[in-house]
Length: 281
Image (cartoon, rainbow, N blue to C red; front, top):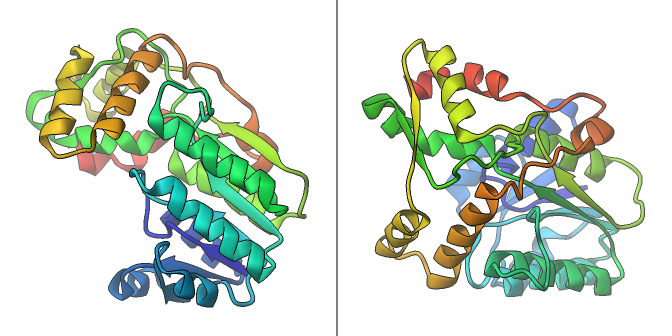
């Protein structure tokens, strides 16, 4: 039995869909029963901050997807899940992490992920870490500007990004969760191409049949916007540093992980755009 946390998120919903299609026994951990019902699968209502609900959710579970939203309490919450999984006898945990997770990172978010991975290492549970790069699904947030202005705004300069479709990340997670329990592994998950945002805009132009251009802005423009929206300073600062790193080609390297774990190539940006075209029209 697999327990999927973060089941209603960008990666979790694809994993739920795949496991349902394959007839794999699993349940989803959700905080809201209505959203759980919307998944169309077995679910249990629980919370990372409520240990009793975690213990109930883990009854009969031997595999776990560890995933959740990014916030300042993330490390403490996910470590509690790991502790509950160890007590429940879970055999294998697959964690959704970040491509440059490191205890020495200048970005808080990457240090939080590294802290969780270190806790996994100390837990005695077999574990794997999926470290994706930039999600193609992040482009969905640019839909209003593409529709209204024919523009994509960013602070990525001429940096190349090996964007990956969240459905491919989910497919990698499914392969690890349903395969044999092995030794710890860290997998950097990328798409098949490293593209600049100018090239991304060109792909949009072709797909939509209308001009779409990329407008580069200072990093501070986006960081200030996050602060205005009430995003905590460590997270806003992390996103600013991430954009600077991406502009310097920090996410340009391609890996064979998707093909290695799933037996098929990763989805291209063109495929992603074809599947979501109506969102951008």
